[in-house]
Amino acid sequence: MSKLRITWTKSSIGYADDQKRTVRALGLHRMHETVEHEDNRTIRGMARKVRHLVTVEEVE
Image (cartoon, rainbow, N blue to C red; front, side, top):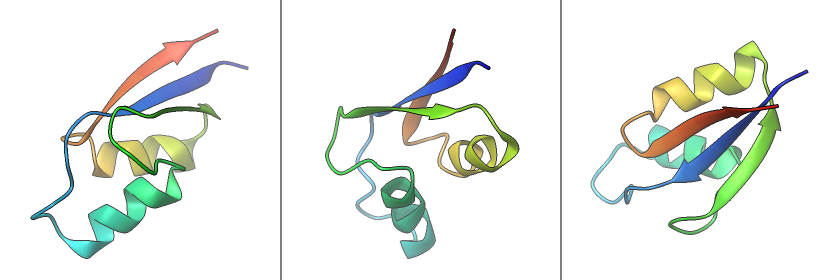
């Protein structure tokens, strides 16, 4: 199964609290940090919600 590499690229200051909580729920704690998650609908939905704050790459 493929994975998603998610990198936090833009600050969440000034955005809604639910978006800040979504970034934290993805496992991101500080700017320019990268995490890998299994590719599933839940993670894709979370990444889509904060797509203006993160970059997402598919990895094998």
